[in-house]
Length: 89
Image (tube, rainbow, N blue to C red):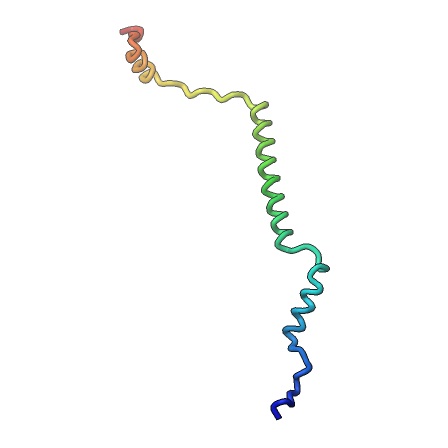
């Protein structure tokens, strides 16, 4: 009675699917994770290269920055520090 199993010669469906997945794993194409990684990497590389190109273009074409004007009070202090008397004193 213990030897009369109804499902003794059948494989459970979950194990049957695992075998098919292993057999068909090479024919599905690209890994979706790899595609996402390549797209994100490509966008990041494009962004960095574009920034570098814009930086080089700006260095060539834009005029140099003008310095901020120094106030008369600061000029007076610096002249006194250097030992040169300010004119008019």
